[in-house]
Length: 370
Image 1 (cartoon, helix red, strand yellow):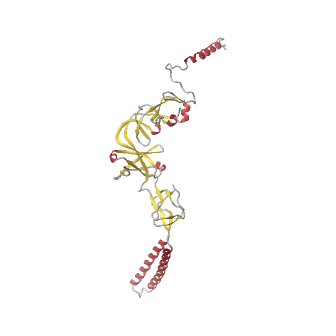
Image 2 (cartoon, one colour):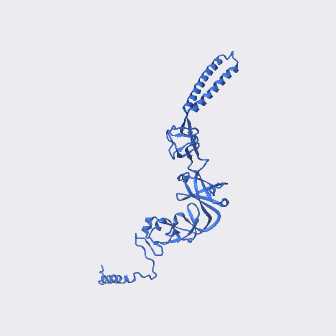
């Protein structure tokens, strides 16, 4: 076993002393060295606007980056729209007569409850004035009495079938059938009206309360199929109709394609209504009447860099920008110009080059580092 050299402790102490005396001499001077690395847990914003963010802080903020590339895509515009009910997959339940609401066999359906076609949702007991109720009761009593007499007469004639002409028996039976029909009609008028679901779907709206008095043609329930909806958008002019290539909306960060149905031929609030059809399970997160942004792609092409819409943030001057990962712990802001691409992406037309890594998740949190 060899012994350590006796001068090694002295050399180590001298090197530490030299480092301590020379370190302040270089402090505050820039000689072209690499940019300082942020200490763990201490993000820094540099004077040029870039951010130094340690790996631990990147994981804490949930930052995700992905490379982008130059591409050619259709020019797009964004139109305001509303989610509407598909008339072929939804319906409304209205009262035909004025009266008092009563629950159906299973009670009133709750919002969002699935119902089947023809299911009884509620009943309406018609409201009659005392005079009308008395008149209806008198008619019922009269028709019942007439029906009883006609039944007995028909039975007597059937017993004399050998000596009574056949036409008298048939006339008596026809009178019985006529009185039975009149009695059924009067009983239906004095009974309740069943409100049934016209289509299968879910209850989108309900105004039913036990004992509530409704008027004729008053809306009580609205049934929709959440997998089949319409989206109505408004365009500034009619020249856009022939240029539509595709359309989409964003639902939970994903683009849902729309099928163009047609355009109206009359202006609505100085704008042309456009109708699109949407299908799919993602539509279950939308509600009828909910405002949405419809991204319409045109046939004309444009050059740019497609990026997720979540990567776009605003600077302190309210300018759109994206964050680019320039080094493992360095992120630089890029002011960009964009246009809509689809419901989940935008097309950067200037300010960004292909091949750069853009922050796609956590960009708003990174933008708040000071």
